Image (cartoon, rainbow, N blue to C red; front, side, top):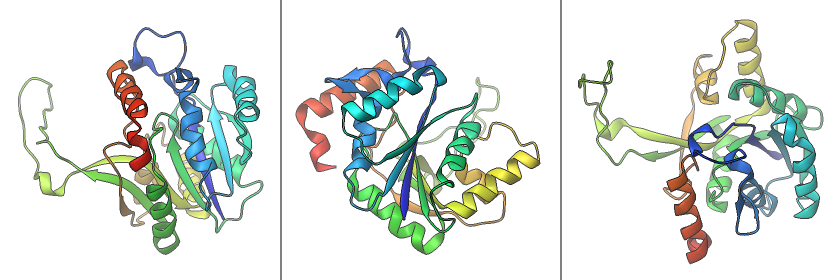
Length: 236
């Protein structure tokens, strides 16, 4: 079986002057995170969804699940003060009703234009490899600066990719990775693939999309609204 773990516990501090985190902002009549969850709700290969969110919003998220008929949502879980803790809390909730051989797609709530194709390809690749990351080729030259003032190096762009989500794993593998990080007191790792790589395991790549971008700033929000208004999300 395949489950989606939706991360909606961030503070959204880079969004600027808003009275709530970005994932809860209304976008054409529904919260941003609901647009994201609906992509997994309507996907035939997703059997269940767990949402990790801020403690203050747990009850509200449960209300939205009923209001927008998100019937695949199995649990709404309180997140932690880091992404790593939030994912770990979500995984512990999922393991209560999932098998260790099941596939878990970990996805940012602030990436609402996730396509059905990306979800399907994550599932297919994870069945084969146990760990996959969604990426797009880096289109710009990347500059490395160690002091934020001078250029130190320019890596070969042909070897560079931008990471997106979902990051998908067999449940047993990603649980083991998080347990080892917890036991070894490795704090605040912001990428689940990094935990898997630290165990000596390979992570395979799945092609993402430029439209599968993360809503981080006010400009991102305006781009999202424009795309939805133009109906571009229908052809991802």
